Length: 411
Ligand SMILES: *Cc1c(COP(=O)(O)O)cnc(C)c1O
Image 1: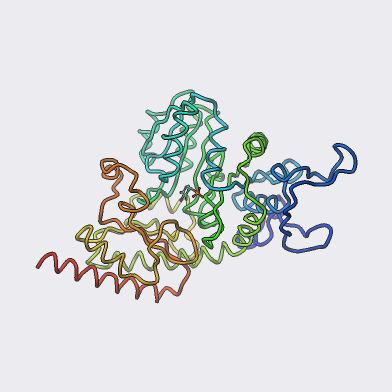
Image 2 (image 1 turned 180 degrees about the vertical axis):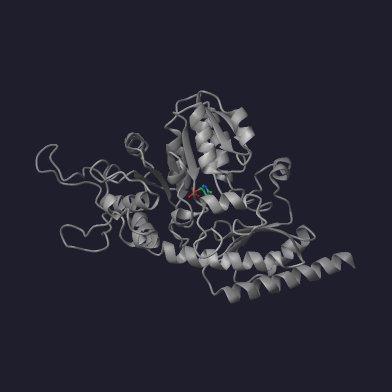
């Protein structure tokens, strides 16, 4: 809602797109579970007919996330201001892909989330006959040679998972739009949340989220989001959201909106603790390399400074590091931590740890894992909002266990 767009983001997460419920004055939107709405006479209603198409609880969430991502579409132009909520991140992506015609050419970042890769290669290549090029978008020359006058979509994910490569959104959007002004530039903003990065402000046409991660942030709702700042695109996405029907339910919408209210305070703690832990790991002689946007050693640190917001730390709660000695010390580390839970997923209040080569990225063929730099020494942390001193003590215990394993291997 445009009347909140002048507020700072910590205020927006409380107020953006929200208004008291008209009948009772309730400050938080009730969970409207009704599937249908009474009409005064045929076709005369209050803007709500059927809950796949219109749901007040979902709208409240959609308007909020639209405003946070910097869409300026007013509620008069679009009932949810250009924000759309789906049953999962992949349902949001699948709906975005319906914006382009069968047989289209699409360019995707090379190391996108595994499920996004699967949707493109194992489903849409067959059912939509998509012609897909996977390109390392941190290298502009590679994008320039891959772009065609009819390239219909550029799929960006930044920072990437798990190697945290950072793509310069403004540059790639400019290059794509120069070659084809109609090319839709979509950015998966899951690793940042709108507190750390707002792709629409850098020239993207659409932002996508797995709201399962930071946006909801409490590891209790699977969901997805699309946001656009362009009214004509909003109209097309609204049509597709209703026509395909993979919408977010009212209870999940309520929980996600509740999660968003604390987004700014949560992200500040995630960022601050992650930066501290990243520096701590970088100083350890048991660690080969730490990849974290807020560290000066990050290969795209200058893009980070231009495009992302540090927000009390280093731009995200995600850290990737390579432990010395490979698989056995890595396993010892993963088995020793007790506050970090060994689990897939990320972006929740509790700290998680995982081993991509064995867990999240096991489906990526070993040769391709090697190209992407996902080796057996790589450990991924999703830093939660526990007391950071406790997290550091946990990391130190695990490093000791890894060190003992390295010693045993050497001896
Ligand atoms: C989890 C994730 C997805 C998929 O979202 P779901 O909610 O699991 O369907 C897409 N992109 C990224 C970067 C993710 O982390």
